[in-house]
Length: 128
Image (cartoon, rainbow, N blue to C red; front, top):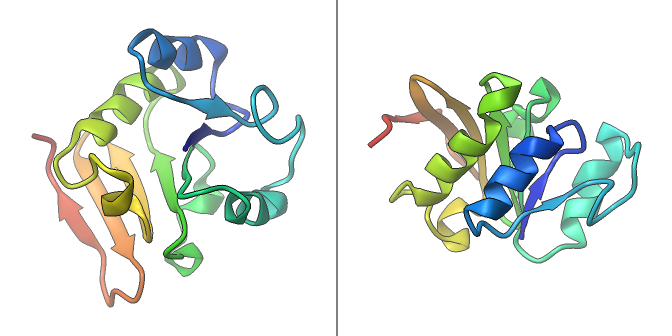
């Protein structure tokens, strides 16, 4: 299940759906409006293999790594979110739920940086 943070713009959600990418958004399709950051991780544990996309830097913390979910921090402009979500979901290293689970990913124009569960250091990938 792909989940967008509540603060992702509606037009970005609609753009993803227009590309036939299955996406849900906190406060619209799942969860409730106004969920606090501290409520997101327990919420993710209630879902099956969720990938959570956010622009909130608080989620770009390798101590949050867990094998049951993926956190994606989008270090891009708010009107670029959909493009970068699609790029991640099509990247050969992340194109299945199984490949994404247990990672914290930071997306930017420069590429992807990620932490995996039990990793000792961050790994970088270029865009393909």
